[in-house]
Image (cartoon, rainbow, N blue to C red; front, top):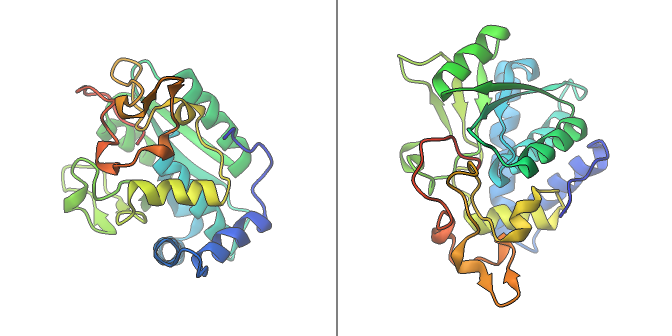
Length: 240
């Protein structure tokens, strides 16, 4: 689905909260409600201007930015500008960066782009302006995700910030159900067989989505455990 270029509005926010209360897909509704609760409490605890997000155009952080937009619309400061950190990998896909530009416009995002490692990028981001918390789209099935909790402060040798993981319990299929039910735009590469996005150096369409006609879309992957089957080992940041 092509990215929606119109500004996120109260109707979009209401659709998210309606999904959280839906009885049609109760398991997904429960996870959406829990994620919104984590984000809303973070906004109350730290203030809308002190909560940022990690955003790199992948499907997981697309869910996060949409959830944050909905929560902000219900907050005491609904016109708050989002602040996001983008760790730009070597040789990113042009389609990913085009999608990110569309998201910047739609969600009113001030994007801080950094080329280098995550630790240095986070330090540069936090030194630019005060940020006490950062939303991250990690799931428990991601590398190193199983040891995380919803709220994790950074380690002592890292820049100090609270890491918030609202969708930690979500599955691969939960992500796609959310995006498709709400018709949230996503990077077009997911329509072409890609299921996990990183650098052009290490990312290919998922071989389990090959078909005689080309490539089936990401949401048709039956086994979510095969999400990264199109990725080869590389040290560049990912955009799950």
